[in-house]
Length: 300
Image 1 (cartoon, rainbow, N blue to C red):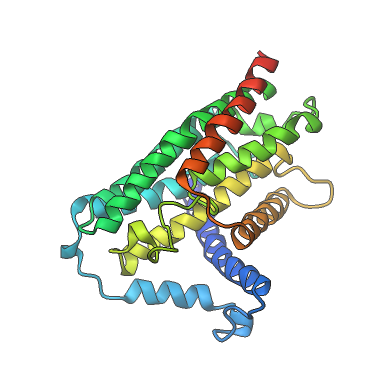
Image 2: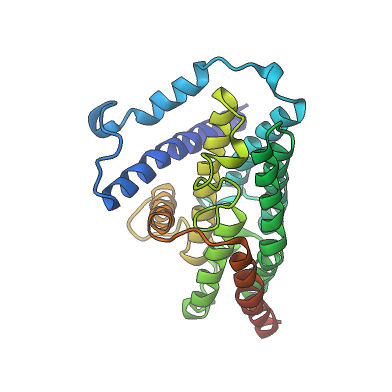
């Protein structure tokens, strides 16, 4: 019972941080574009995520307009995006799965399946186009993503993320090329700018999810920021010692590192234009895949 309460509190904290990550993104992009961003709802717009959540929660939704596959896909996407955060160690005393990197591959597969099902189960051509784009991202990024997990496993000699955090034998200089390649792979697999082909907002707002509204759109929108937090926390865990810090508590340390990487990813969205799908596939197969094979052969 106590464990269930702790898990519930942890999930609640993750959802709150994800909601306010949306405010962070809107504020940062607004500053770059010389705008104020949300500033009317509370001091400096601090209550804007709460207002957005209440609006989506109480907006009337005609569930009869959605297929059971659409509802199932939205729930699966949100659940998987939330559960994968359990894989991130926030302290040496908290249990994490022994084969965490393999669970990450499983969560990644479920998230991609959910995005494809979200688009294909709609009655709109934009949803089907978005689903096809999600499939193309699998073709482009799934192989280098799997190879990156294998590379990390060979370098650190473990699949346990907690062991990776506590490992002090690996030289960080050797990890710098892998860090940049891994971050690009995560941007592709998690549908983040400049590789956000599923949404394609230059053509239509939220492309693949255009038919969704109310609470369904809310959980899809929140899942996007949960995934953003996860890839940031995963990068901080593998390459920047996660919760390890001299001056800060473990949870504050991993949270601060995660938010710094999240801010960098947001700045990438504000600065870089969207790539084409053929450019993404060339980057994946001609640059990222050879880098991963180089690391694998070097540490075998």
